[in-house]
Amino acid sequence: MNPTMVAADGSVLAPDVGSWFGSPTAEEDRILERAEGPVLDIGCGPGRHAHALGQRGVPALGVDVAHSAVALARDRGVVALQRSIFDPLPGAGRWRTALLLDGNIGIGGDPDRLLRRVRELLRFDGGALVEVDPPDMRSSRTYARIEVGSSASAWFPWARVSAGDLGELAIGTGYRLADLWSEGQRWFAGLRVAS
Image 1: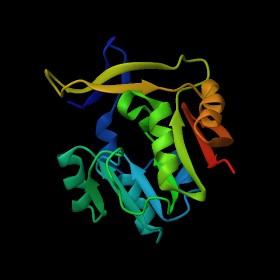
Image 2: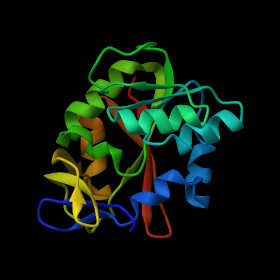
Image 3: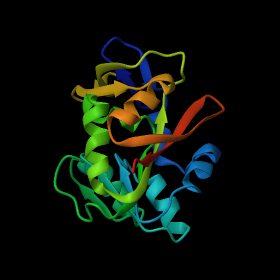
Image 4: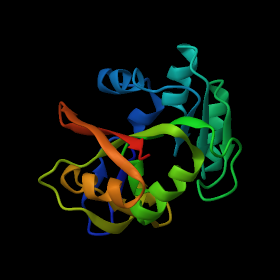
């Protein structure tokens, strides 16, 4: 059975978490082309994005709270830390790009707090590449868990950010919305640190 990420209301946030163990999709490859090193891959999971960047010669560090995810990333050859993004991290103020893909702008259930923290870690000319929900969806805060058959993880705070709300969120957290686009069914954005 494929693992899924499910919200407290029963809606499916990520229908195939198992895909996180594979290689980046074509859409993800194109967004990774925009990443300037050094890159901080936040919520790196099994490390597919950081690994792909490393294959391109772009230095990247993965960060994830899950021991099993970090172990899998390291097995791929990714440099990864088991840590919360809100914990002390190396290179604060020197990261050129932060990745918040797979909806990871929802980490911690508070996108405002998360983006402010990421801003502290980025260089003055840095930015974040984020994946958001389509503009017709509503931004919300919830709890989520990973389900595999009849087994499930503990609930954790999560948020969803609509592409339509991202501009205001960016301005309020020290960024400007540099780019917003869709590929297939997915929405991505480039945020730049505001000067």
